[in-house]
Length: 367
Image (tube, rainbow, N blue to C red; front, top):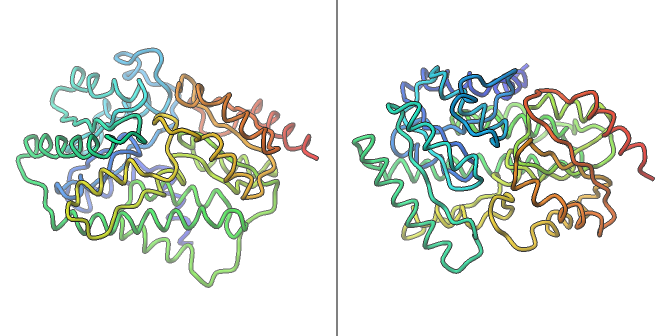
């Protein structure tokens, strides 16, 4: 089945990134955050992919160089980089949470031969100066990248990459937009969202045309409508486990899903890099790592509109942005009549027995 191809990529995105680099004959440009614009790496002749978390039993090399407060996604990303099993041309990080911000310095010390660039985006994205600062930061990154790679940004390729990447985000956004009507299971939408981060854009779009044909009958499942909020989804299997308990995700608030998919770049701007930088500041839904007033109430309003009956706040251990926001998000959901449950995940690829019990208890307690 063609859907098996989508599931295979979602289950092992790192293998897909390695295969893509070999097929295209290009080194990888690895973005460590959903705020890093992969179209810029594309325009420098790299195969732009997002470095996604890999559930592992342990992170021996990463633990040797990383501070104790780092979350599992950052640990797994660093472990993958330190294993040096990928044809990496450049690593791109962004300003954000403490753990992500420390990665460039750690890599410079642990792997001096691995080039790393940082996009120093504003944290307060609603300030009047945010667009200007973001544009200057992106220009600085391009100059630094040009010096490292010894070649200039290809503006023609950038134009094509912006269009292709936008088409991918639109397709992923449309899939998540179908969740409230139960047209497709959430696990399939998340599989597509993960695959979109590592596949070549046009290959991804072609695969989606086969997996999600326009005339296909609805394949969604019944279940209690819930909201899933968090930074990154541990795995598609974790979502399948959630569905097996009788939950149906109809509203998403994750970087894996709708947060990244909502970014839009202005068409035909006089300055393409400026438009890309502004698109990062004007995402409809930001992560808690950026300061946005009223974010919890906005999440709650979207959940209520989607018919959500309960919410699950998915937290990685030591993730300060999500932990600091949790009380206000729980309160905002409670104001609109939506009970919530905070689940802490670390390195597991599937839902634990204890978490299964907690989710089941939440769902069974609903009126």
